[in-house]
Image (cartoon, rainbow, N blue to C red; front, side, top):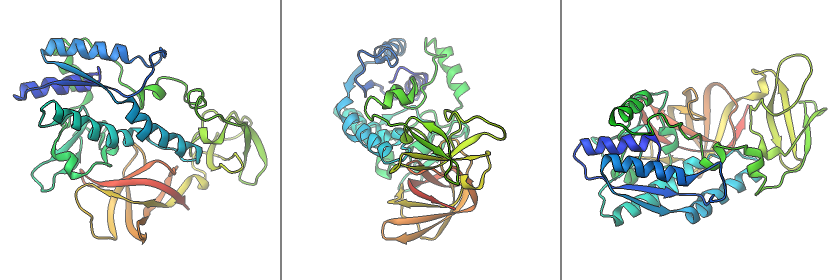
Length: 347
């Protein structure tokens, strides 16, 4: 129970289906002196919902586990020039490891979350499916799970749209029915990313060059930018907008190109390692669809083994802004096969 509308409606739906439900509020970040990320308000919202639903609410602090297993690695990836997605690691390490363990200690059989995804329990082992509402589908963030984690998980919202969830919350009289959804991690999504990260990774100003190497601007730290980024470059002049095409962390340099569809922004291949296959290891090479970012368009691709533990993904046509550190997630129809972190992108 995060205090948001999704987990609140999940609990309500489980009650309607005859489950005995206990809420568990997880605190994953110590920000008591931080007004921008107020877990006290989220807890108050969760308590109000549980009072309406007439269910007990427990609280647990996973801040240490989050720091050690999620945030430290997040900072290391940024420092190395990658663009990591800590929400995916949080799901693996916290929401589907620590949370189910606590649920079992409370005597629970299942751990439920408000993710917009579905589980196919007819198959053995169970399979992860996209949410019915493909505009809200969150299976991308769950690709790091395995079939065992799915056996004891429930996603009550998998067959609903966000508007249906808000409508249900309003019908139930839940005060958070119109509460704004969180964007990414609480303590990053609700504040200036650069100023927050520089508390932990001091940055150094560097050059922005064009593809020929000529300096065209300055940046505040190469690791703060991502491939395909337009905003924050501060490059004026005539013609099309400028976009980050490459990052040279060793020299603290950004290489920018002009035009949304510049060839240097496109890649035909991605290199990945240690693909997590959710239900079973498929026979390779394999044709599938792939997402290289949440809510990105599905891309037709071919996966083949490159060397032990490493794989090459060939896209049917060049894909824009394939970004090292982000996840590539594979699908066949609505079935999420699994995914991996992108190591490199090649034209």
